[in-house]
Image (cartoon, rainbow, N blue to C red; front, top):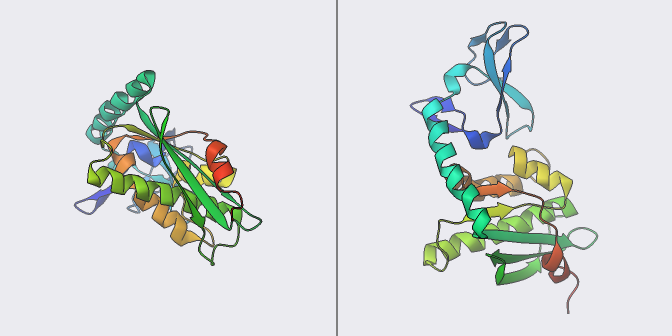
Length: 213
């Protein structure tokens, strides 16, 4: 979602869907009326994780068309294996450790690991934290020019709760700062159409996150 001149517009990366109203509703973005049988859009509210309603005023067809054009570029890259894949994981009873491994076109280019902050006391936020660390590394690498900023970026998790956060962008929960941080880091990739959320198993990152001396 992006705000332009005070109007919040839905974008393709916002996971919204078009439906026809069976009864009248109120738009959650502008409080306008959505009449029966009118087309409107359901989207996920980041703050609550709940599905909400938006009227057609918030749909910018040209913005979506431009997004789809960018998206097709990155979809085509997969056929040639041109992508950045972030493999992340956490381990320990309370997610005490995190790790990530980065692959570019199936070639490993970086791996890191460390201890999660003391306020993290469960595995789900720890896995979200691991993704944040991987994305921060990617941001730095692109700014330095070590990695070209024009490859598709694949992010995922074998944790169903984290996978849902990645798909819906929901920030609700006890560890909201982690999910807000995750969305901030993902935003430029979403807007560019570069982000692809797919199942990513722990693999090397899982082994790397296990207890070490």
